[in-house]
Length: 198
Image (tube, rainbow, N blue to C red; front, side, top):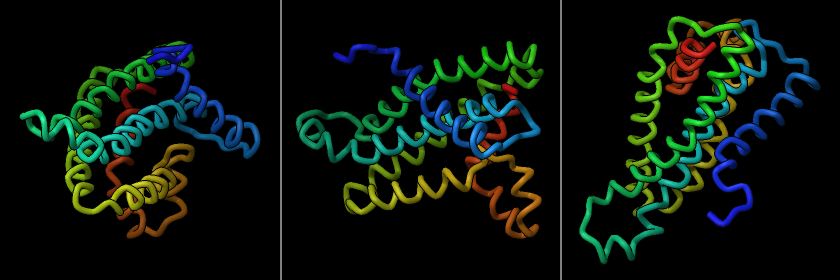
């Protein structure tokens, strides 16, 4: 609202993040991935991650930020964090479309598992909604949740194969530690996005 580029920011903001990571990790640090071209590999992870992160951060404080509205209106409180996640999902769809289109042209087609992409999106959405509602409730009692969440999201980002291959982790971690690592739900989500789009 009232921004010069308006809805175009739904495309531009995540693309700028991808561009920065591509310059740092591909052009400077020379990181390579066997699964797909590094640019596509980044896009398939950063776009879903941004949706998850932005939704959680905004939804966590939604009940407290709108406490006057909750007092004056009689509606289920969970609709506030839910509406934030659904709005984030709508903003995420253009980014997902960019990933699919880029994959189609760069890889000369899409994998057969592309048909399962809506299911992956629904799982991603359900996880995000669940965490958002729980955190928004906890935040009404413990304001420290916001700062704990910021630290956890930063750690989770680096412990998720966004800009490095999961094969690299498997080769570097002992078997037990790798089993713990893959229990990170976002490792599975990103892998499912990559299977269906790359």
